[in-house]
Image (cartoon, rainbow, N blue to C red):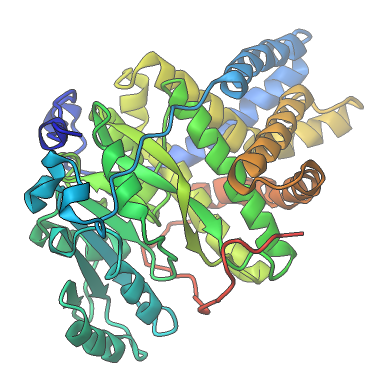
Length: 469
């Protein structure tokens, strides 16, 4: 650790953003027409393949390619864990020479955009202001986005209690939603690294000690923490979400180890300041700022790493209607980024490994559910099995194996418990087929107005170590 301050300096392995021509984002222009064209092409190709005698062989060839990539992901070895920084509570004599100077610790700015969060804001601020990191080397910024409940009053009280806390109120009518709130504050911060949390986050006290060393790994521009559902024992919906998070964590690690696309997930994301500045901050013309920033970072040559432990906790959605709305927003935001940046993807602005990885996951995550309806209709009309059943079988197999391995890796529970969770988790995941299929059709015909739709947080007190079954 003796050369930590020097090794932390950002490394310039990226392409200037202006050369990527994505700084002046075009907004929603053409999104609906591109969505309609994509839907028409997918449906049209599906119908044509059903009519061709050799259409089944095309699907089998596609399945072979996806299977090869899937096996590579499953067999990959995740990157080795990085040793955390020593505890800030240690005496100066116990620290290495390079860390005895307070300025040797990278400065961190933690940012939270809050709107009507009076039920959760106080424990969040308390946790953020008592992290195991030198207090002089990080600060906390809470953006009160015109809350109409008691959030502002609670923040005023907390600001007098914690000297690290900065509260920034946004005026009525401020634009840009969460992205606009983040963009309003991050230029005024001084952190070498900027961390973003949701208002319901349960932040481990040692989080920064594990996060900071990951930015010392080459051209890492961002790090995403594993997300854990703190109220997972509440009902079947929250149990399914915990299994879903485990699946996502597993594939994040495996994809990154192969040079694929690591992704940001909003809560618990940390971004290098120079990388964020190069990307022009957060995109205010999208409903999923984290997924959009993911592509911008990769286009600019930065890598995104993943921290498995410790995890950041968050509340799972407990009611099916709220879950439906949240998942639709996630699906639409994820789909939009492909519509927005398809030219850059097609121009091979990403490394070949990332392009293959992104294309494979797009086909399974978005393409397969989108063609499910015409595939089923043509199968009924022609009295045959759906043409894409081999791809569907592959997707289910990858989900089952990935979820089981993810649960074992994140929860470290007995095999039979992980098996039960895997069975329910994959049954729960079937809702994504309907979400994505309807989203793709809706986005093709209906104009969309950008607005910040927040999830209601209840302030659950479940402990992260509570078992699901």
